[in-house]
Image (cartoon, rainbow, N blue to C red; front, side, top):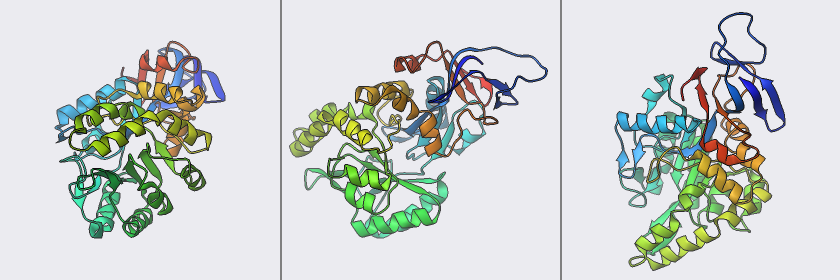
Length: 354
């Protein structure tokens, strides 16, 4: 690769070589050389994505393959699959598909989540199911922290404090981190004080909770491209659940302020699209642009899908000897993040694939 190789926010090099599928910064002694020119970033990260899932539940392998290829061609080469009802382990054997870090299947309260998505259980079974998914996943477990309670007519927390404390402790004992879907405010303090590692969406994050998140180092994955759908969801539920609809609109209205306040306080923020439910795949560039619109500096928005996200997930970037997973652009993404939507080349495991 010749051009500008963005190894890190402050580490820019002129050349990168791919030798045996791995990154090298010294020209190989011999052999055919194919030159690719442009601005190079580590393969992008979508830290909240659902391969193997659509709005109705698990999908077949052919559909999962299309989802993964769509993400790959958009430059997403590392996915944290934040819950899927499908077994996608076969993807690990495909050299042409993105790498996936799985969180197992969602764990939700009975009748308190999207049908066919989750293990739907009661609090007394939470520890056992967390243990099961910790063993099935790749170091993550996904809880549904809140959802609409039809009797209340609004979002409420799904789990009592004692249950989440015991469940998170069990996951940590087994070497797994825990994340939770949370739209509203009510569940957040209990989850963070119980030791959770990450919160998905985090639209309910308030000024009084921000210092707690920052102190505990709890990351958020805002999925702003998904939060953009809240007004439509609210309109659809207005007649049956007006209180919930109003709540969803308020969460949507303050979404950018919420993310900017979190970032200002030092809370780690990462890119996630929530693709695979109702949203299409391949939206990582749109989510980075949303983070910039929310007020994150461009360098930090880029880090949230490249260097920072890879370090958070324990995967290498463009270090010497790392797998050559990278994306090439015609212009500097630090000048305009919209270039992320049009990669000129995608290199996965050292091969040009898109």
